Structure formats: structure tokens, C-alpha cells
Length: 355
Ligand SMILES: *Cc1c(COP(=O)(O)O)cnc(C)c1O
Image 1 (cartoon, helix red, strand yellow):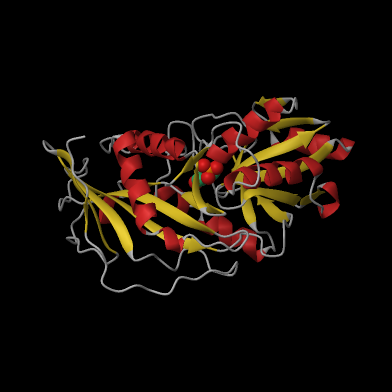
Image 2 (cartoon, rainbow, N blue to C red):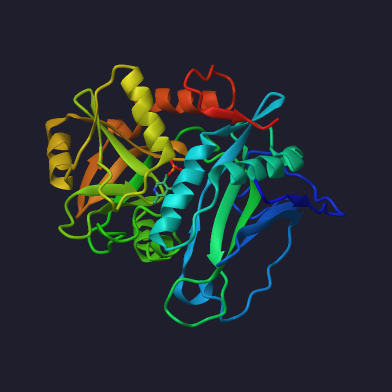
């Protein structure tokens, strides 16, 4: 590693919240990680500095053409240890997203060390109340002041940290989801497989429509035929049908969730048949009418497992498992959160301790 990390400590320390009511993404820790990229030099000057606003040229490319990617993962308190859940998968995915956005790759092992160093420095920020964690947001922005429509010559990689409360403060609660029939999140060949800003802002109108009708989120269908099920908001989606589990295959327009991957691996271990395939909303509705749609749940870092109690599609309502949490959804939730918080033995080698 040719780069040398420098650490500049903050002179003041903020109070650290520790309740399951911390609102998502509004409180940040005392320090952040920054590293710069310049064409010719590569990634350089890794540093941990006091958390502070950035100064950017108004012509910085990020503001105009959105050349940016991000990640989301969490640090969990497991008694006196701090655990990360499959963090190498996040850095791998960051590089896949970067590749799609023509952003130069990072050295994953090098950045993993910086990430751990930042968590080590901010370890007192990892809350201990059940259900809480320290959310980790790595992101890259393009910074060259240049209005040409072309990849930037300079970038900044940053990592900021935010303590978060529990996603379900009243326990796992099944949600209502609107099946979106007008707007599209992504199409094959587009940026759906990348965690990049534009995918999220372009979803706000569909999100608002879902909220107005009393739903908590949007289920996206494929952009071409509006038939095949893709994913929910910032979660992948699973269905339990006749005792077997089905999830949409990664078509290029779906985000490759790390929770999705972990759920598939657990189900296989448990001997539950899990199939990654195309599934249309008509087919799902048919299963529903036959009474064989037993459970539905979203998967993602934020909620881990989010049971779906109701799907609303073109005026048709599918009530799933009587708005109650399914047995398999609960078991997956308990297992994954148990591993993340060190309550269950990690036989898969998924957790990484920050010592
Ligand atoms: C982040 C994200 C997911 C879930 O990925 P995890 O790695 O499980 O957190 C799913 N869909 C979208 C659109 C996402 O942005």
C-alpha cells in the first residue's frame, strides 16, 4: 500500500445518541474519511478529518451529470465487540457501480482498512440499544469543474457515519406496497444494477403516489412490458409460494442486494428450495387467487427483512398471510440480525470484527 492514512482529530465531541428512536440519516459522527483521485496520480491522500462541509466549484461535474455512486452498510454492537456484516461485498459492489458510471475503481482491501480505522476511531458512536446500529455511507463524487459531458478527471471518495435507530420500533410490521404501473425504475442496459443517485430521485414520484394511497413503498415492474417483478424501493423482493421461495433473477436492472444474497444462501442451507427466475405480476396474482402465495418480504440493509402484508396492483388487492409475519420471514430476520449482533454463531464467516 503506497498511500499513508493521516488522522486529524476533532477538537470537540458531540453527544452520542443511543435510543431506538434516532431518526435515520440526520446525525453524523465527529469524523469522516476522504480520499482524492486525479487522472495520472490515481487515488491518493487518504485521510480521516473532522466532519465538515465540503467546498466544491459550482461547475463540479457531480452537480450537472450525476456521476456518483454510493454504498450502505452497518456496524453493529455485539456486547463488547463491533461487527460489520460482509463489508467486502459492499466494496466489491461499489466498484461494480463505479464501473457502470465510468468512475475509476478503488483498491478494495486498502479502503477496507481505512473504513475499519474510521469505525475504530468512532467506536463510541456505535449505539447499543437493541435494533440500533451505526450506518456507514461510502460514496464517490466527480469533482472536476467542467461542463463537458464526459467522465470527470477528479473524484472524491468519502465515508460518513450516522447512528440509526431500529427500522421497526414496534417489532416487525408487515407493510402495504403499491405495484407501480406507470413509472419505471430501470431497464436492462441502464443503471439499475448500480447504486447511483439518479435511480433514487427518479423514483420519488412513484413513491409519493404510493404514500398517497396509504402504501409504504413501491414494487417496480420491468420497464419494457410492465409485467415482470423487479424489486421494492431499496429492497429486493422474495415470495414464498407453495412452500418454495422465488425471487426475481438479476436481470441487469435489479440491485444485487447483499441481504438478498445472504437470504438465498441461508435458505439453501436450510433445505428450502429457492429459485431465482422471472416472475410476472399476473403469475403472482394467480398464485394469490389459488391461495398458494404464503409470504412476501423485502430484503435490504436498512430493515434486513421487511414482511409485505398487502400488494395493491391496478385496483386489485392481495392480502398476504392475513397481514401477519410469516414464519420463514421471522426466522430469516432472527437469524440474520442474530449473526449481525453476535447473538448467534456466525458459521458462514459473514461478520468482520473491528478490533
Ligand atoms: C441497497 C439496495 C438494495 C439492498 O441491498 P443490500 O445490500 O441488501 O442493502 C436493494 N435495492 C436497491 C435499489 C438498493 O439501493
